[in-house]
Length: 489
Image (tube, rainbow, N blue to C red; front, top):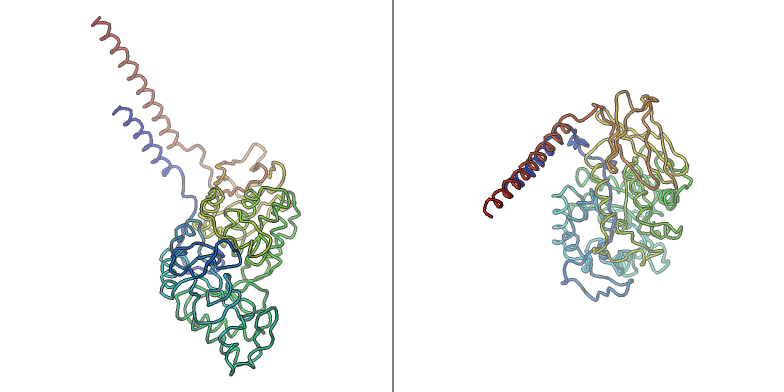
């Protein structure tokens, strides 16, 4: 038995050693200049719907009524830090966390006090620091308008001229009023200065003029270095990203089924600033809902959509629960409690793809070139001085082949498939035949073709020799034992 263990250990050690000698690193983990938002990925969640980590703030919660608070809190976010971090997200957007009459923060009553259902200011700061220690930042929503009639400003008799209207049970501020503008700038910057958050998403900005929003953005960025300010509405203001609600519609319609028209793929990617790219949002129906209505299998559809989005240029924004195919047509059904006891296949897929993206600056912000884009078959490259990648998205109903040329990849190259582990070399016709089954995404690293992995082959030969030697020893010992038994009879 000792000899057998020695054989196994030796073989494993040889193969492990040659894997480092013969195979270069998959991607470059670079630490260069400070990150820009183009290199980030955003996980969008609602505190109340994620995880209940503390019972001390469960005030009149009701998990059976989807319109009520369910108990999710800051402590729950800290408890699930590892879970989110392993999926590779670098920004966690947690919605509005000010005192509110609704679980999703859509009826805020203050711009200073935190919602007691979510926890204390100390617990919130603890979450921020815990995520920061793992190279993730927390982003918070700051609504400029549509607040509760019970908002502290709306109840102040001295501020009644700040109210422009009251519609749908919400108060709309007069955003042309300089006092209102100054008060909003002061409240937002005070919040950003008090807590070590990484950014703010301004919401309900439709009635605000660009000059005021730009002044607010400038003030927020003046509170600290590397502070992001984005929006979830279209605007000409100086936000760090572009946003268009049409983006989710475009990508949802491309990926909800196979063989779909993908001619609009590039539309969201135009413009000088990086674009927030997504397949749904917390305000829309779920992507799962659309794919299920197409009689498609949502997890496969999500793999196709997310696999592409994480590789395209832009800032991926993914809603919590997408990795477990959360369904729903409208809120609160789209804002379900997170189920941590579901199958992890899709979660593992997100981990694998985002791990590549996070290791490679080229996959985050390298040059982008489309080679093929036709009815669900998408092939594009991400290139830098250090690396080249080919991404093939076969969102069609049949196996597809694309022949890449040395003009596109260079001479003496090979393609190393990361997810499906397929290697592609130049053939006798002088092309690289890339073949992929239906409904699969593959990410190929372009490397120098050095032929056979000699160290690996040598090690494999040694393993076989050791195995044969082991078999010979066992046979000889068996013969000797039988001879001794015969001699004693």
